[in-house]
Image (tube, rainbow, N blue to C red; front, top):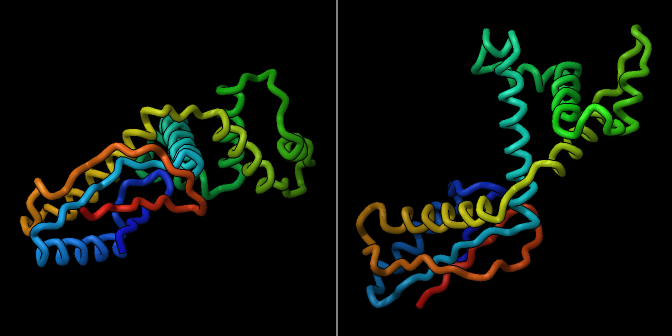
Length: 194
């Protein structure tokens, strides 16, 4: 009951976590002597790739917004480009060559797309996947960004517990904890009742 789960790279409390925190708040209201430690927590192996993917998405959005189509439709330009395999491929290829250099060898799947004859449909999916993976590996996510995510999570939990005024803020403590290895695709924050 004291484990709150977050999506990778996110500090958003989903509905099940909100319900769980409401139950914890109710229990704390009924037992005024209880206090709660909320750890600042992130999982390097889960959060770093998600933050890198979000960083890549931001870079692609900036690149698309600089295009003619992006200037015409800034709200939907990236989604439209990502929905069209050819545009998606070209956007990733431009980003790859910009980030890694034009001399960096292209993945074989990208070369295969470039060598397809005009009337054939290129195999975009593997090329998009390979370019995406190479670019995500190239995006640097600092330890400070991970720590900031951990703090956002702790403050989201604290806010959910004290926002309605039933639990005094002096009963909820945000604490530093060493990172714990985690598995799966969600980050589990374990709250400690004192």
